[in-house]
Image (cartoon, rainbow, N blue to C red; front, side):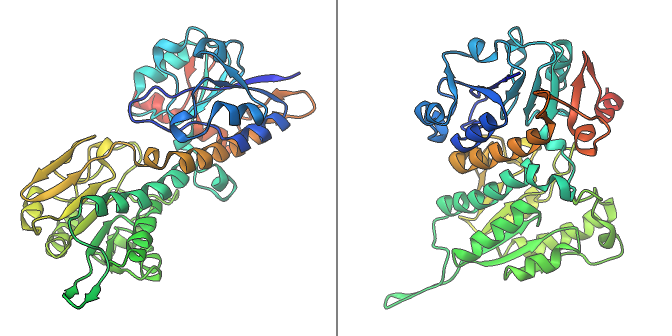
Length: 380
C-alpha cells in the first residue's frame, strides 16, 4: 500500500521556506510514499518544481489537488483553518504549529480530525537530536541576525589599520547563549568583532568562552539551577532579574551591536533591554531582537519593523530563518524526514504512532477529534 504524502505551499506572510527538498523527496519516495508537491511550494527558497519532479514528486496544480486523499501533510507553519475542507480525516500533519499562540487553529485541526504534530514540542533528548527543528532553524537565525546587524551598522566590524588611520573593532553583545546565541557569537567573531555574551545558565560560560567571547552574568546560587531538563533557560526570580539588569545596563552602554535571543517555551519573551538602557547606547548602535515575534526582549521593538529610537536602530525581523530560505528548508526537510521515518511500518505500508513513545507523546497535539496534549488541555 502506497501512502500519499503532500508538501504544501506556505501562505504565512514573510515565509519563504518549504517543508521539503529534492533530497528529502527522494528519501520519502524510497520509504514508499507517493509524494505530491503543491505547485510553486519551493520557489521562494530557490527549489524549483522541476527539481522536485526530477526527485520523484508529482507537482499538484493547487492546494486542493495536493491535499486530496493525502495521508501525510508536511508544512512549515501548518495549514490555515480555512484550508481544512479537503483534508482527509485521520491525516497526519507535521509543522511548526505554534500551539500555545494559535489555539483556535489547533482547535480547528482537532475538529477536522487531523493528527497534528507540533515539531517545536519535540523533546531535547539524544534520540531526537536529528529531529530538533528549533535547533536547526535557530542556528541559521543566529548567523543571519549578525549579518542583519552589520547591514544596519554604519561602521565596519573588524579592526582595520590604514595609512589614513585605525578603525576600532565593533563591540557585540549577544544576550542568550543557546543555539542561536552561540552561532551569533561565532559569526560576530568571524567578522572581527569583540564579543561578549550573557546567559542565566552558568553552564553556558564554557561554551561562550570556547568561542572567544567574554561571559557576562550574575554568578549566584540561583544561576546554578537556571536550566530545565530540556536544556532551556528557566524563568528567573525578580531579585535575580534586578541584579542581571544592573549588570547589563553597565555593559550595554559600551556596545555597538546587541543581539537578543532569549525565549522561554510557552511564555512571552523576557524583557532584557529597557528604554533606560537604550538611552545610554551610542548613536548608530543596533539591536537585533530575535524574540520579537514572542513579545520581544527589547522595549520598543516591533515585529516586522525597523525602528529608530534615541539614535539606536531596533531591528525586528519576524522570520530570520526565512531569510536563509534554501538552507533553512533543506535542514527542516531533513528534520521532518527523521521524525517520519520511524513511523513507517515497512511490512504493512502504514503509519504507526506509538503514543507510549516519548517523542510522539510530547509532540502530538490533536487526534481523534480532540486536543490531546496535556499542556494544551490544562491551558484550556
